Length: 121
Image (cartoon, rainbow, N blue to C red; front, side):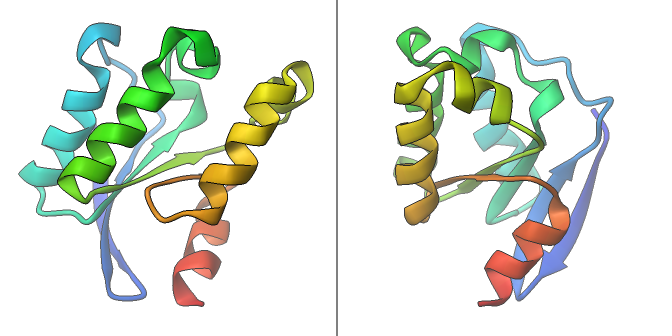
């Protein structure tokens, strides 16, 4: 799994590469938390293309599980990339993105520059 560990605004972030897409759906949340702990990162940034399609179907419960484990273990999760297709297709997903972006546990950002701008505030 390729990842870079970077410091953005005094936050250690594990930024997964586009080739880091070998996640098993049943252990996805645990794998992301484990990655953060392995690298002593406070936040994990995952490219949208690395996540299985089920993640973006709120009925699957995967996003909720990721957010809950991130909150429990105090690890920020960031999904990086274009989710506009999912937002357009589902009012519920639109609302989910809106609400989570107001919090501190799970964010959706278009790119790493947007993540950096958000952390600098």
